[in-house]
Image (cartoon, rainbow, N blue to C red):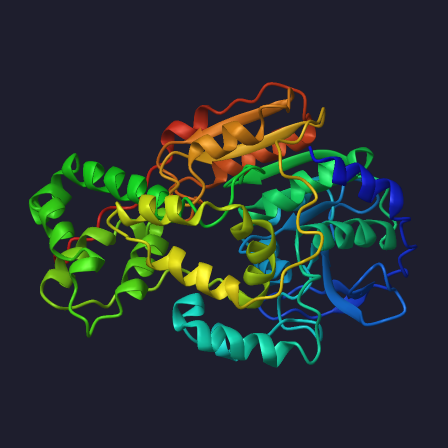
Length: 446
């Protein structure tokens, strides 16, 4: 861990957060009345007299009078936690049995008054839109935000401010993808405030995005080709899948086709079982000139937040020539990496970019669900993340991707998580994982 972490902890006296007043509210997509409020935090904690941010909070109450509150840390970076209120009010309602579910929008995300809404990128193809759009977004937001203060350290401090303002002494954390970086930073900065942590798609703290996007995507693509060959229906429908992939490799596509956007759509589709099983059909259709791909689940990502995090915390540490060469050797090519490098060259950087850059040491109980087919955060990331966590338990889901969306028997994950939260130090019964399976491959057959 960097010495800077201890300097920050010693020199930055915590600001007393303003209490959050919760009131009954209606959230779109939720029938029951929830509790809503707003967290007020300074944009720049070194200058609390300047601009303040208003972060939306939604609380889904657990059993009255008992239980441990659990804060959801969303991914992206750039995805708002409050968007998941319908999920915890519906399919994941069972997870409220252990306590309140607390959804706090990370600074810059969502649709609140302090969101870094940027139509130049959010309403287009994100970073693949080009540097001109990135600069337009930067200049558009600079009139109402200091883009240097939207990184992981700022989000982590906001998280603890929310905990204190809501009156919780200790909390559990549930983190997805980039949110696992926030969770690990919180464990390092506020160890006494955490009881237990659940992570999906763990991002090791010494990983620098987006260096592995194309190589990890290649691993996922290779696994999918092998899975197709071993599936009777897929093998019959696409007997020449590997040759078809070579035929529509982005580098070989006609100049009229958005090569980078096509490769990104395939990479995103690989992320979850629900869309990954349609990739062979999409490739076959592309060989016939149809490059339309069924969109993956919409994440409503604020691209400016993604840039605020990665341009300060990740990109400066990359060996550009090495990573461009490594990505260029994959089917995906270096389109995504080049786009992000160019975008970051036009984006402001935080003066204090990263609170934690090494694996975090903690005695807290940690449960990590690991997707065996994860092409975003490969399984080795999880193993690297927990190497200094003696009470961590890894549960591998062989057929899962970055997230398990599309697998059968998802209630298995609820059972494991509830057992863990009930007794975080007890061994887990994970036998139900064997029954989980991905959907059938889409073959185009009637």
